[in-house]
Structure formats: structure tokens, C-alpha cells
Image (cartoon, rainbow, N blue to C red; front, side):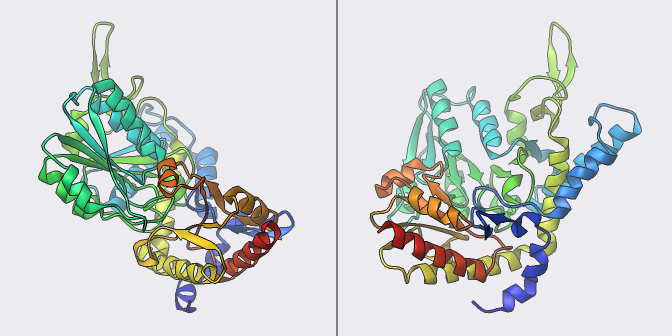
Length: 412
């Protein structure tokens, strides 16, 4: 890895924005390589949350008093920031939710009254459980059939099989943009185009892609796209569902309550328009505002620079770990991945590796990563997953490799 990208990004200056990176774990400097589970939060976003509670804490959309109007403007300003980031045509196509899981369930609930028993839906073999279970529940309600797009041993979707599965009965297709377990970047442009060829709608789970690249929902012509703020330097408990205007209007409300109504009587209720139709109750106001602040922060750094630097980290970590005997990496070659390194050491359970690494201050994720079908495909109990972000360094990778070698020597 050259120093060019690190100098361009000024990594040491960026790291100062993340207070948690300076702490110690078990007496060792923290090396945080669990970014695929949740990213760390910069001071700028933390301060945004504090500022909301200190200067503008009020409920939104409902009050004529000044604080309510200020809070509403900040919240809707964040929605506009999200719209611009993902290049949605209209702000009302951005539904602010509790996160990706909430977003997917919202869509699944809507199709419960639309799908018929003869209909088919397709889901990829490398999905997170949150992009499998809601669709299984949908099929149980409607009698429709769920079919699986298979994957190869390299950790890539079998596109020829996908083409064969598509037919006039296919109504919905669900694929993650990036696999959380493997880091694979899926060919969603082709997936969307082929699905539209049979008039099927497509939902893309963008939770793992959003930290590494910017999705242009109009250029993709995607029908639904979901993300979670906590993957993108934002707070937990907030996220986004993008949907094309006509498709969102077609879906019934997901929850009933305040804010999502136009008029209520005991005889009849009429619903509000987009986006409020899907935003019942008091939302995570501070989280929504901070979501916008997190996107502003990352765009200030620049996603092209982030992607280039993270690829250097991934290439370096891959080359170094391949020097260790009995290590098997799962997933595609680095040029088709984001910054995820999923691996095992022969005859060693991933949990044991993760536990020992933690003792040495290295935070990685172990287990099935809420993607049990992938683990069943490889016939393994799980993997060790090291996932990198733009605030990580080559020196941290060196510490990780040293600790991994030590852990291996203790277990074999």
C-alpha cells in the first residue's frame, strides 16, 4: 500500500474525529475491525445529537411554536440531504425508518395484500436474515413461492441461474448490494434490468454498500433501496427506505397512529400523503437529523477517496493474511469486494479466534453474521470477519496480523 491515499485523506486527522478510537481494550490500543456490523461515530455527528437536545428538542410537524418549527426544519432538511445523497427525484420518496430491517418489513407488509398464490419472488443465496425472513413470512400469508438465486464457491451470484428463474410469474426480486458476510459487490444493475424485463420489482438491501459507495437510485432504476444510518457513521435506530413514488403510493400504510393520517373519525380514517403515510408516531428526531449530518461528514471526505483507500486496506490485509498457513478466505477476489475479509483457520473455531483477538485489543466479528445459508453453503459454523473503514490504518492491520498469528499458535 502506498502512502498516497492515506496522505490524501489525512487519516490521522480523520481519526481524531472519532473519540472511541483512542481508547484501550484489555490494556491494548483498540483496533476496531467490526465496521460491517456498525461504524464508529464522529464527533461532528455526536455533537449534532447533543445540539438537538440542548437547543431544539420538540416534536415535529405538529406545533406552531418556534421550537417545533425549528426541529421540523432540521428533520426535513436531513431528509433532503438523504435525497440528494442517493439522488432520489423527490424528498417524499425518502421514508425515514428505524433502519434496513424496518424498511424491508414495511415493503413486505405492503405486498401481503397484492401477491397471489401463483406469484413467485426471488431472493439471493447470500442475503442477511432481514432480507430473507420477511419474505418467507410474506409467502406464508399469500401462498406465493420463494425461489433462491444460487451462489458459486467464489462467493458470486450465479447469473445464468438467475436468468432461468425469472419468468412472467416473478413479481419481486430481493438482493443485497454488498454481502455483509463476504463483501461481494453484486451486479445489481444487471439484476434490476433483467427483473424489469419480466415486469418484476426489485428491492436492494444497501446497508453494507452505503459506507463504501454512493448508490444513484435513479441511474439504477431501482424500485426500492434500503440503508441503515449506523453503517454510515450515523446513530443506531434510524435508516431509509427509498421507493419510487408510484410504488409507495400503491402500498398500504405499515402502521397506524398519529402523523400518518389526514382525517380521523370513528367511522373512517383517511391517510396522509408521502412520506408521512409510512411514518406513524413520533420518529427518532435526533437520529434523523444526525443521519443527515453523517452523510454530510462522509461526503466531505469524499466517497471516491474512501473507496480507493479502503481498497488499499483490503488488498494489504488480504496479501498479509495469505502468508499465514491454513487460512481460508471466503468470498471473491478483492476487485469485486468492499472492505470485508471473511476467513477461517483450519481446525479452529472462529469464536476461539475472535475471543483471543479481543484479549489483544482487536475487535472482529465471529459467527454466521445473520447469513446462515452462506455458512451452510460452505459447510462451516461461521467465519472470522475483519471489516475495514476509512479511519483504519495499515499499522492496525499489522497489529491484527501479529495478533492473529499469536492466537493461531495458542490454539494449534
